[in-house]
Image (cartoon, rainbow, N blue to C red; front, top):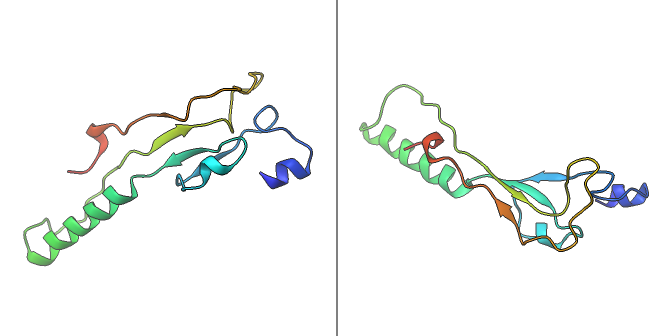
Length: 104
């Protein structure tokens, strides 16, 4: 955000910014930062559950792959090209994960 300001560019009118890992101070930026939140707690819980099952012999021997859907939290730091920035945007527009794409 600082580099954008140093180059005399306007966010989001000229440059959109999206961050990954919705961090606690994403709302402190002006404009507030759009982020992609990852389900870190669910990822950790799943890892512990799978590891425990492997250690106790109650889980599968082969590796498993799975997808845990992230959540897009739209704030004021991005917009479509040619669309003015919202002046009074809601706190966040979030898309919840698709339960069919998560690990059991």
